[in-house]
Image (cartoon, rainbow over all chains, first blue to last red; front, top):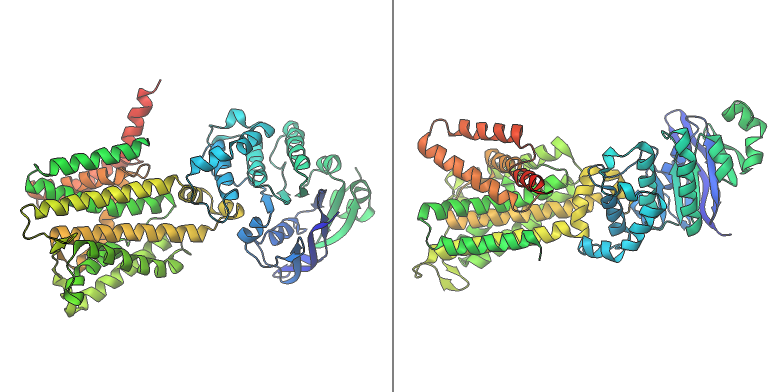
Length: 250
Length: 313
């Protein structure tokens, strides 16, 4: 397997707080990796650095062997790194279908996207239809995004990233704010979609049931450092992970 | 065929045909409405992008002065060249200022745009070569090479060109708003972060939309100067920009036809109120705005959407 993402000695401080302390992480293609850690461990900071929202104080980020350190979120996104957000970032006044149409219209027409939107949408209607089906969003397609239940908003957020055909997908707490009954349904839908497209996935998660069920490999962060990296079952039973993150063994 | 485009085209043809028989005052009011409507077209593009400009008088005035100064400085008084000059000057200026303005949002964008328009007002007011606060007269002597003064219906031809230009601007903006890039205006208003994380440049789109809106304001100003025959720095004064904001709020931004409806209502109320109640015409405009904000918060155009909704099963 080839490395899609590689970080070298990443460092990020917020005043006296070390949010990233010498992070050396490699992600291979077609893998699903969980990222765990207590609050303030630097998980979202890591995602923000990889996606260009934050620039590291020191260190380098490579995506498919290209140095992307300090590039804008837009530039990194165009290379194939997409993300979803802890708080779903959707277009609230638009319908579910319009949200997907906007994503498709940007994704399919880079860098020239001056075509009539209906033409683009018609050409790519199968992508939108597939996405609505895969994520069971069909019944909501004419609903305005602000009126959707939180779980559906999460799905819309993730589906907007997936229609862009990412090579690496970063999910920030995909099941936070979602009911216990809904969380496995949501993750099943997301992971099925991701696996069929052979996309590398890194997701931040606090729910260890989700981590155990959906990841092969897990990274554990504590105070901006990687304190464990390996097979999920082994990481979750590691003493320092139990002590610093889990509180008790699972 | 697109219903909006059909409506715009029918409206333009109707105006051209009826303009021939309309009394002079009605032709004048319609011309002013079309000029204001063209400026407000650009304003609704900004509103759709989530921005309000309190300084579009800058481009309205620049367009007018670009058209008006062709004769004294270059000896040209061809109407087409006057419009081209307005487009060029407003494009270059807005492109340059856009690099700064695209970094700002909300009240900061509004006030910064106001600041630029007041700088132009100050410069023109102090410039004796350009007539200072009195301004100067503007004459388009020819249109497409035809001498307007020798033509029996010279004024009518200017009216036709005003209608034609407004129709073209309206049509092009409508097509732009339906394009992939145009649709992003609403996406930016909703969620800039998401647009960036989908791979589109928010700043570039804001910059493009700003330039388009400036050119529309410039064309409105140039047409106004040609129709009225006089320009002065008041065109860049904050009250002029305020009128554009007033019409924008009154019109609503959901259709490209709305600005022309709003401009027609505004100029009619202003003219008739000024005629019949010269001391209280501002009061009447204020009451109109109050009524629209309370009963039609999304502007006059929302009235049609409401009727359409009621009519549908």
